[in-house]
Image (tube, rainbow, N blue to C red; front, side):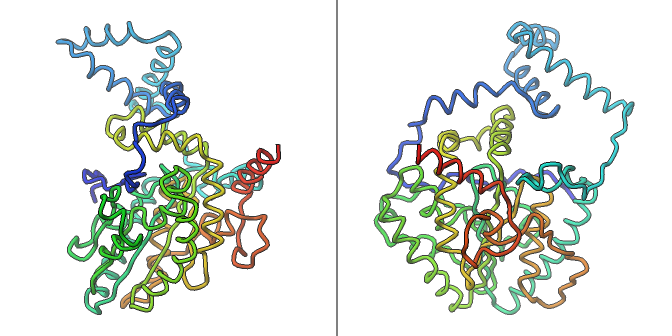
Length: 394
């Protein structure tokens, strides 16, 4: 099964109203990314950066290109790239075979709010389990088509949380005639004057369809108020109306699944850095993404407010801690497959959902007294909110 995907549907920060010029970006935030563009977290990032520079040299021979690139690099960067090249060659020569760690070994900082697992999910096991899950997704799609059911799956999260990549793993083997991805750009002038939910309602599934929303109407709960694209009153009205809107969808026969993909601030910066140095991902790093880096705390408050208003018994959120994309993707698919009792469902192929990275809003809000947020908890988000509170008091 091929893992090369050329049709990338991820549209982080795409659906924003026309009231904001995306060119208006904080210079400090841009400089923050620029300052880190030569600090490589992985050998792959270093090699990708080096290849990009060699392409830009436009010389006739490899030697000339190498000489030009070398002349532009400060000594510290040359050392970093040289070490990366040595590591790459040693790995390709098979001199130092990788030792597979215990995939379920917990991280040292897990109890203080860090991501639960020390080691990344191994690629071979991930691909095997993904294959089994995608077979089940095809069974689900056949049942949806035969019975005329309608499914909406919403993916929300901060910029670089992995929404587009996760959606691709859901859809890459589904029949595109019955599985649609909805990734809206900013509203037109006419759409901006409509009832807020109207343009989303127009893209809901027909009988026999599954629709995957790469961002959704929840822009008005988080992105728009934080970035100043709507008024406080508009956002408050949305929070009052959205749960009833979603219940009306359910009464109309739609099965609604809502995912919030959660990452840490450190992981977000790491992924932004990857986008900055990788020419195949650079298009994903928009001015709005860069501006959002300065507004982490504002996003935290907006997310908390959204969960309190919209994580209900009828229309719950499923939170997935997505630091390890492989674990996150597998568990997101499992949640959908376990939520729908379709014909031929094989629970042994689906496997169990990991409670350390999947849960309700309580995974984000340990400090809340609301019974809605009972369950597994994480200190990480709580620290964000505590820091914001101290700033405001100060």
